[in-house]
Length: 158
Image (tube, rainbow, N blue to C red; front, side, top):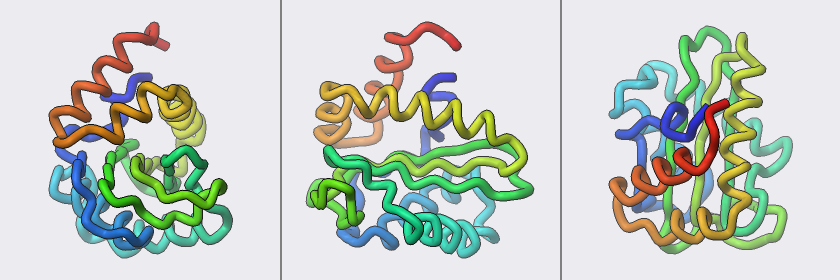
């Protein structure tokens, strides 16, 4: 599985506006809806599910990144969005620092193994200092898409 197979090309928000977690997640959901990979009718359900997941434990894992994620029954395919904040988002991260790079993952509840594979690919990349640095410095969605392609090219197909 590769990053570009997970992340919707038109759901990259290179300049998140909100410094608040819930609103930033909402911006990314709006991008998924605008990219036509998520039905707008389930936005409030998705937002509620993601926020409930955050209340159980922050997905702000430190080093300026967060990976909010949710598994929802009835979805037909897994999708993800990328958000980059210039000013930082308060995600209640484990290291208490602001988050600058967010990958929002939405998966069908019926396919948990696919969700785990996607999380593994995402974390493999986010654990690399260079990937985090270039993602944070990306100034537009084309820069992010190029970075994702480069990350995919460095890994053997799985």
